[in-house]
Length: 309
Image (cartoon, rainbow, N blue to C red; front, top):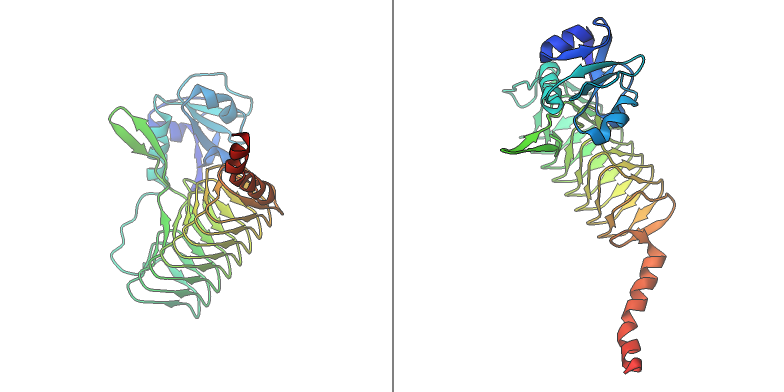
């Protein structure tokens, strides 16, 4: 997430009421999670296990809960609670904006696009040309939709990421300030839910088609011309490359990659990254041919036991 304008390290430290290490005029351009950070971004880290990863990332400003040696060319913001302060920044730079009409005045709707009754289009949403948005669709703020997109009834674009920190008194939510981006010629079935990124984009690539009741987690990137069947659940920060097919009731863990043109059979649990161009089945996931051989061998166990008797 980029800020509307550049800010100094001193300005950000004042906003958070925290100490900083580095030039007070060090330029801060935005904030992002570690998998999408760029120079000028703030990244937060609050566990020693991940200190090195954050300090060595592309981010040039690290919001951290311990005073450590600052890498050359970077700056530190020292906070007693980086998670809390990251939320403060999100609320400040991407505050919730109330809407009291079905289609916000700031929304941009392309020529030839049809929006059926009872749908909601939020603030600063952009919808391209010749789209069809069926009834009871909710499109949250800042969502971007390309041309020739069809979205069926009851689908929700832009709900918050499922991202929490456990506290003694309960769970704190990491506030989502990202977007959903739907590219051209995408088809989305009924009752799908696509969460926005925490700071970046959740993206559905051009020409991809989602069946009914598909869930896509925060910051996931789905490639071009993918087919995703009903009741599939895709976790956050997943990369699905071009022309992947996921059949019904597939589930994935977070942070994995499914290679281009892979086919994942129904009810498979994708527990790890898999190569493209192959067919997969089962939980934990394996190549289909190997898994089917194993199942065939299991059926032989009673016969083998009888012979042993």
